[in-house]
Length: 165
Image 1 (spheres, helix red, strand yellow):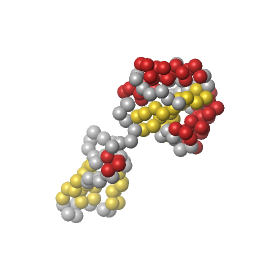
Image 2 (tube, one colour):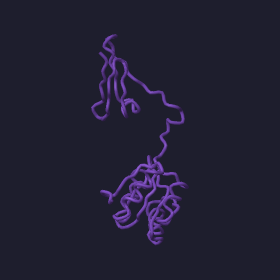
Image 3 (cartoon, one colour):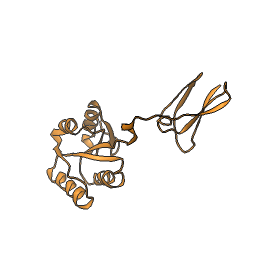
Image 4 (cartoon, one colour):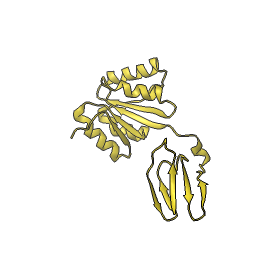
């Protein structure tokens, strides 16, 4: 019998096939123990990471739409989650909002000035800044355009609220 035990603090999906176990997330994070009943002993699994992977690469975010609710997203990335995340670009139809967001990032949060892109330059922004994730906080009726295009270009997407169709 082959099975697994997961650290109860963390969630993971697992599948056991005779002496083969596939575990997502827990494997990567070294959070489980594997039991091999045939040998009647516990085997602790350790993952040997490449030296360049030992320092976690920051997740890269671009944000499109800088209206009233957008600030809570770029504030969180620039301040609260700055150790694991970085904001790489801003996109909006209104250059004044783009300038204001950069002023807040630089002046209040001590963050670097970001490149700005007009709404018609969304694809160019993704190509040039290569974000991992696009945060869509644009006006509701435009959500689907940005969500679909970002995913087509290989980005994950965080949508401010349910997307429109």
